[in-house]
Length: 225
Image (cartoon, rainbow, N blue to C red; front, top):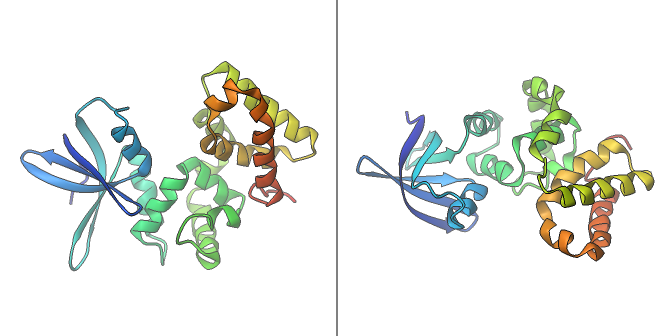
């Protein structure tokens, strides 16, 4: 059983929507599937240390041994929890973590936001129902502190961009969208848009507002309607 690995970075590659890293550990090359976000950081040289440490989930099949690597133990444990649900395979588990942070996904479970959950490739209506049913009780303690975690995870250091997000929040409230709905979609908006472009050209605020309203009107942020 491989629990974690620490070794030298050798190579990166992508196959379809799967992202891989090759790590040399004491003369052995380990081929590990990783999350897209970590792949991008390595590819764009955002991580300068050539020594890589990953938490590993080893899945043994009849014809292969698969290694999945995560930068935190929490990611690994969440992935294992997802795999314990009937019908959920490793690629769906990876797809969830590629699309959402743990906090975002737990919030979707908490609010029973089926449309958001079904936006993950490979997840349909029946599977979203099963995920909500089985995960809501398992992540009860995490769900309890969700609002605080969302604030911490999506804290933006740039005061100008913070002001833009604050203005967006107030504008949406003035349009009678519910505060809980807004809190659900703001992290998604932050991930999707180029905030630097918004900062440099305030005329794009209107586009940002339209994007947020589109999410809300299509019940992506549905909590209490």
